[in-house]
Amino acid sequence: MIQISENKYQNLLPKDGEVFYLPDFFTKEESKVFYNALLQNIEWQQDKIKLFGKTHDVPRLTALYGNADKPYTYSGITMKPTAWLPELLEIKKKIETVAQVDFTTVLLNLYRTGKDSMGWHSDDEKELGLNPLIVSVSFGATRIFKLQHNNNKSLRHSLELTDGSLLVMQGQTQHFWKHAIPKTSKITEPRINLTFRVIQ
Ligand SMILES: O=C(O)CCC(=O)C(=O)O
Ligand SMILES: [Mn+2]
Image (cartoon, rainbow, N blue to C red; front, side, top):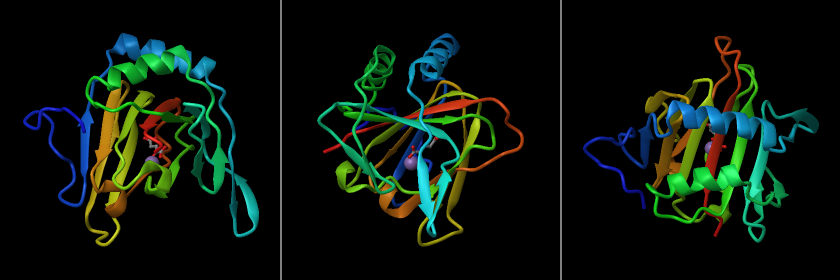
């Protein structure tokens, strides 16, 4: 699935899945160019979520890009992706040098400040298949990424996702672990995250 040197990068999970973190996957210059291009050119939208009969704004902006023939249902909404932009194809090409997979879809999140967040979840939609490979790229502000095991709450891991970094989740990770980006009062700058996925 992914070709990374097991000596240099170790699995961050003690069991039931594999998570690898590659800081500085993109240079500072590349990261700056992609950050500015994505901030400008992506059609960021405000998704809504219904909780106990009340509609709320999700605490971040999102977008879905990818192959037109691959609709994606998440949080109960079926989304048709917008056609790939050149900068997205450039990022996809670079990550396909370490992950020998033709990604069909990218989900983007814009965390405008530390007040924006992502709640605990697994990326376990059925379109992603049994053991999905998810490659996550970060540009802009550093945010904390948390992982917690479903059956044993004392099994947890926390790391900082820095500008230009890459995180890989694969194997059984989505069956056994949840992940989240918590709110923080320390961060006032935006962060852009892209998760490349394969819709079956
Ligand atoms: O922002 C992140 O690093 C996580 C995003 C995420 O978990 C998702 O889009 O499913
Ligand atoms: Mn996720």
